[in-house]
Structure formats: structure tokens, C-alpha cells
Length: 549
Image 1 (cartoon, rainbow, N blue to C red):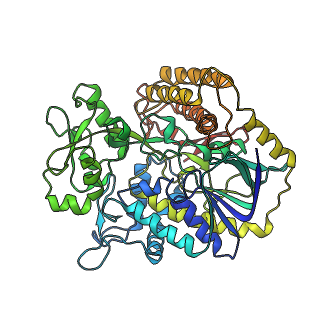
Image 2 (cartoon, helix red, strand yellow; image 1 turned 180 degrees about the vertical axis):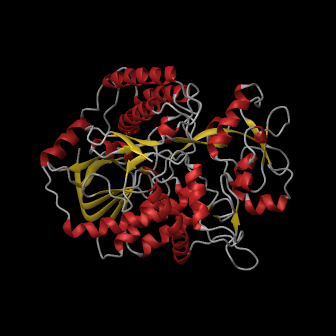
């Protein structure tokens, strides 16, 4: 494998909303900054796919709204498992970060008065979700991209980071990985490293996530000795597309329900008020379980979902505020102005992740994490609209902290570490009995069947057993040699991360013997006060245990 080395002050791994905002902030300090992305820069994250909106308590529509009410909604929605300080920072700083996005060129929908418009989302006391139609994330990323270019921040595309560089003192000094286009081995030396790689939706077969979301950030943080927090808390968005198979899991934004969309079962009955007085605007965990229950009790559609209907809305409302959804379904032959959509839950967001403090510092020197790769902000269940705000609030904080760390950063690279990692990757090329993509599919089915919306001890233990069996099969993977783009190598590297994270999610789900937020145990269906604590996992067992909330 050919080698190439980059040197920078601040390395940002991931080019979504949090990564771009972190890079922009670090650049303000006159430092060299590099953003490295597994896919195409600005396009391979989940921010660009986010449709519904950005929560900020401007009180432009409902004057009684406030940051205090936003905080209370966030804590209640998160089952009070949130880090209260991180949640407070989110709600207090969200308005300012949105105003900055506007200064970068982002356009948000406005009322006739000229003030920002705000729509209702699940779990909100008042309307506080700012939006640009149903393409809010895309609008944000367009503005962030323009600012990254304006600041002359270097971006490197299509590189899969495989490990963080660590010295004998445990300090991080950058990362290394593989250029996916030509299979070269790349090294990035940096004084501060920020992980903003998003979640791990692809450990499940049905997900709204971008293809790159295979838990890479969680895995590299774990292997470096960072604490991971509440990994059992995986949010299944209530509404994803069902068909055709090529669109299975693609997000149907919460904005559809925010604008008045109705969930209807195969008997033609609107069912959400049977589960929660808030109806379609209950929190995502409640709506996802309700849909799951309707399907399992025989009231699902022929394709195994439920109907989401907006035909009662004026066509001009759909065309203006749900344009992306209109086009998305027209593309598969469904006109949502005249007929309902068929939807079902889809793996969407990880509330858990690397444990951070308010400055986005981990327990590992020189390592910072922001966005979905970090845990603690959302507790047991994220409110729709809070994630886009999180990318900007904590992206900025991570960039600032990483920049201030540069003058005092210390790291001594051992070249043997690089040689060992390069050799490990080379050894993946071999003849075997299983292609990595086959084992990926096997893992996804294990997780879908046992560690998804409804969980039980028996299924969780079976999942751990099957994950171990897949890990054994990985010793007999077939990865053909190739000097150019090699999908089999990428699959093998991703599978390593997916198996690791699937095991941690399952282990944590087994430990939490209660139901809280997105984590529902059928054998422990009630929330238990004594379990109001975060579960911390650590490779070295240093900080492993419980954190009282």
C-alpha cells in the first residue's frame, strides 16, 4: 500500500453539520484545519438528509415559549437521562447558532411579518421548529459548505479513517486510514482531533441514515479508551418509506405530522390517540411503538406498515411546505395530495455516544467529539428538531476547544503504530468462505430481530451469541486484492466497526432492565426510578459503570 501523510493543527473527521461548524470555529484562531470525509465532503453526512427543522426558542409564533420550556421539553422527552448541563447549553445557544447560519447564507421560512416561521414537532409545548420547507438540513449544509470554502478550509474526500493515532501516554495525535478510491494508506497528524462521524444506523437493515453511518466514530473512540454512554438508546423514526426496496427506510419527515398528517391503520382508523393524548405529535419513541403495535396486531397495510395521510390538507400547503415529500413519493408513483403514504419505523438516531463535557472534551487527551457521535445531550429519546441545533451548538464548542488546545498539545508518534495498522489492513486481503457484505446482512438481521423497537432478555442474549458467531466467521472473510476502489475492503473495515458497536448496543440494552425513552424492554415495560442513570462502557473498564442522573 502506498503511503501519504497530511499534517495539520486541527483534524475534523466528518463533514456534516457538526464537522463543518467545528472546522469553521477552529479556523477563526488562524490555524490549519483539515476536514476528512468517508464519502464526498458535505454530502455524506446525515445533516443534508434532515428535513423537518431546527429547534430554537425564539417565541416568534407562540410568545409563551422560552429556553426554560425548551429545556423542560428536552429533559422530559429524554426520559430525564440527559446530561442536564449539555441540554441547558443546547437550548440556550441554539438561537444564536441559527442566526450565524443565516449570516453564512442559510434561508429559513418566514412569516408575513418578516419574523422566522416556526412549526410544531413531537414533544413540544410550543411551536419552536424553524425550517426551510422540508429540506432544512440541505439548506444548512449549503450555507456551511459556502462558509468552509470561503474560509479556505481543506477537505479530503473518500477516506475511511480506521484508527486514531495514540502515543504511550494515551494522547491522540491524529488518525490514519484508507483512501477508498485507490486503497492508499493515509496518515493525518494533528494536535487536536474532532470526531463528528454521526451514528450507526446501518447496523440495522432498515435505516434513514446515509450509507457511511456504520459506527466508525464510536468504534475509534472506544478503541482509544474513550467512555461510551447510553449505547442502548437507539431512536427508530416512526415514519420511513416501505417500498420499493431501494427506498426502504428513507425518511418521511416529522414535518408531515407537524403540518397535520394523520396516521391511519388498515381499518381506516386514526389510532394515535389510543396510545397518547398528543396523537401524531407524541414523542418519536411513543409513535414508533404505536405503529409497531398496530402492525403486529394485524392492523397494518399489505406492505407491512400504516398509512400517513395528508390528503385533507390544501394542495398548496403540501406543495409549499412538504415539497420534498411530494417529489419523493411522486418518484415512486404516489401523489400524496391525492393518496396516503405507506410508512413504517426506520432506525434513525443514536442518543448514546462518546461521553463529553460541555467543552466537547472526552476522557482522552486531544480528542473531542460533537454531533451524533457524542452522547448525553438527548438522554433516552431525541426530540425532532433538536439534532440540527445540536450540530451547530456543539460543533462550535468542539472547534473552539480543539483550537485552544493546540498550543498546549503534546504527542509523540511511534512509527511502529502506523506500520502495525497498515499491516492489519493488508492482512484483510485473503481467500475465505464469506464475503464481508454477507456477514453485514447477517448482523443486520440479528439486530433487527432482537435489538430493535421491542427488546427482551432472551432475544438480547441470543443476539450476543450470534454476534460472537459472526465475529468468528470474520476470521474466514474473503477480501480480494485490488489496487483501485475495493468495495470488499471497505465492507470488511466497516463490518469490524459494526460488529463492535452492535455488541455494545446489545450489552447496554441487557444492562438496562427497564423501559425508558427509545429503549423498550417487553420483560421490563415500566420506567424505574432506580434506573435513572446513564450506562458507561469503557474498553479498559476504567470508568465503566453507572452515572446517576
